[in-house]
Amino acid sequence: MKPDFQLRTFVFLERLWLVGALLSVCCVVYFLLTKDNDSALFFFLFFIMSAVIYLIRKRQRKRHEEFLKNKS
Image (cartoon, rainbow, N blue to C red; front, side, top):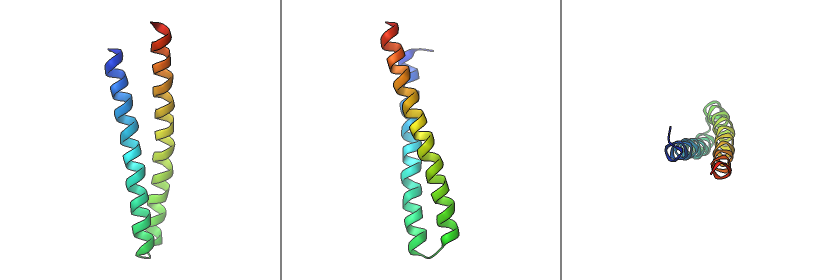
């Protein structure tokens, strides 16, 4: 696989999880305002999961960029 394609894939997946985290925060706020606590809890847990995966992906991308920089 080409290094450029790998970096673009890492960035895409990183941003995908960031968007998921932002959407889940919006859903949490909406469901809290409508007094639906069970749905708010579900989306809060989804927020935590997607935020953790976002941070993992970001760290993975940075390590891969540093590996490519040291390789060349």
